[in-house]
Amino acid sequence: MSEKEAHIYAIPLGRVWNLPPYKRAPKAIRTIREFVQKHLKTKEVKISPEVSEHVWSRGIKKPPRSVKVSVEKDEDGVATVSLAK
Figure 1 (tube, rainbow, N blue to C red):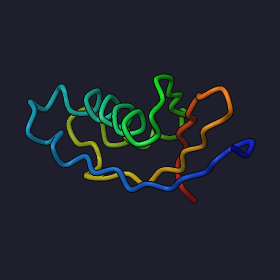
Figure 2 (cartoon, rainbow, N blue to C red):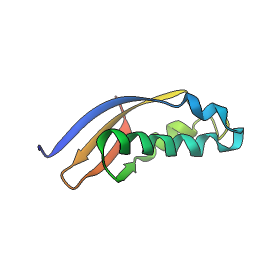
Figure 3 (cartoon, rainbow, N blue to C red):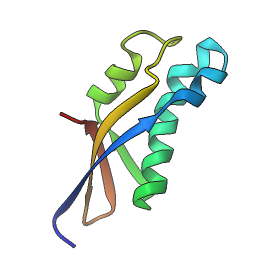
Figure 4 (cartoon, one colour):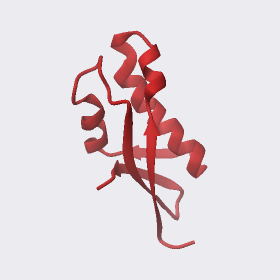
């Protein structure tokens, strides 16, 4: 395995909109974490502040419907999530 493997994902967050308005943005962050854990088979996920700011940019009630992220997994099994360029 190389030093870091970079993956780009478009994570759908549409299911978050089925929740009450004041639970949407926190659930969106949890959904991103669960998506990365499932697809990269890792337990530890670090979400960068820029991803969090993007999800929270329109407030707690209106997170984005999807977010495009770049995920890097190092040799220790730690996945780092950042916004895709």
